[in-house]
Image (cartoon, rainbow, N blue to C red; front, side, top):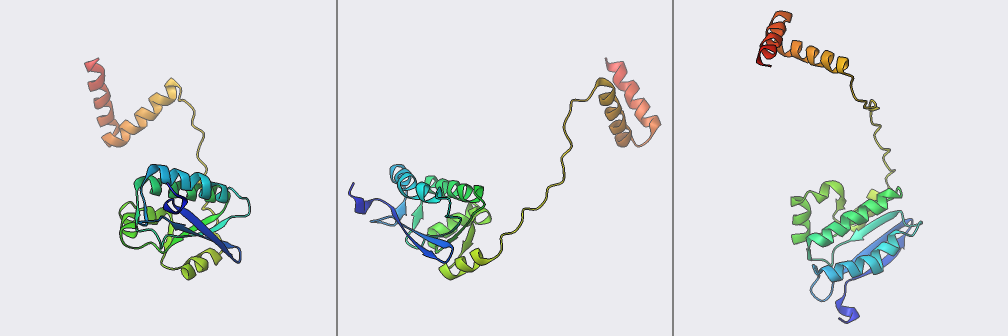
Length: 176
């Protein structure tokens, strides 16, 4: 394959944001596994791993079709950027690409806007702090007595009264 038939990117900086435009000549389709891997390894991965690249706007305006493998690489790109506390916004998706983003709910994971200007505005917003998660109790195995107590409490809840709970226990004991 000649270089002109392989996908490639063009980059430019606008302030602290890097615009990454993907091209997939000659037919604007990212579908061949070999081409997607080549694009990932030769262009996107080294670029994203650069420590100073934390705000990326991915321009998809030159892409008319993306295979599931290409969409998978986009999710990997998102994860790599966010792992270093960066942000990724995609823009310019139209037609089939936009439809598939909605169908697969990628638009819920990836920030997807219409234009470069909207992407720059989105990336200019302060980064939202992660929502604090309530502390999770440490999970320890229950002792036999704790398990019996938990079962008895649940049985009482389900039965509604101690008398009904005792009747249920008696019924289970008679089966054994």
